[in-house]
Length: 301
Picture 1 (cartoon, rainbow, N blue to C red):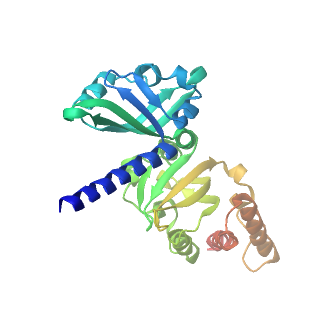
Picture 2: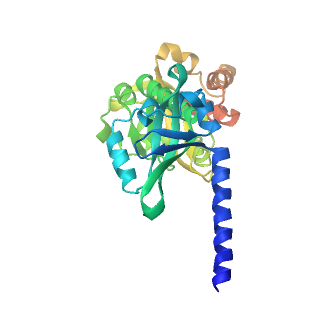
């Protein structure tokens, strides 16, 4: 039993060394003393910071990691607690690097903490991409109307821009159906029912739309309806981005078409279809046709 236990111990030690070696190849690794001074570093950490080893070894932790709560960090490490998080590091010539990292206290003889190992992944590119997306979202939120809908068309949220050009307060529309913005005839039309069926199935919709603001005031909006998907690729909600348009800018869509059955009426339908397709860009042709025909039918009632 003793011999087998010894063999298992050797295997465990070899496994641990293999894991440490793999981590050293794939991550930045820094060894600190309990005083926070760098004892050793690997090449990945040096490459991330753009530094040479002699400029790093012997330097304090604070030289590379300007933390507001550094004292709290080192007290926790001295107690043997692992600490993980996202950290900003400063490299050569003011280079800024973001790491997803974990500090691991290492016990020496007698079980006392003798050093700290830092294992870190450079996430600078990912963080920049996230920041860029966040800035884009903020810019859109400042300049466009944004509304969130459930898959069945119920209003979940709306920003101030959208509330501004529809005249509603948020509490007046949350929990109500999108059809509050269209007249009753349109809400019962095949085109409108198909519109929400396509959104629920995950299809994107875009175009110029006639909508009703508070008090049944007509507003024209250029909008996109965008299904949002979960991790499994299933639609979970709809986000709409909208810009208010004047009736003049809406162009032919704002003009009442001629009587049904006449050649002029047919020409207007074709003009509406063509204009809707051009404005929509990514709008599917069947949606453009549905929208144009719905407008034609509504004007002829």
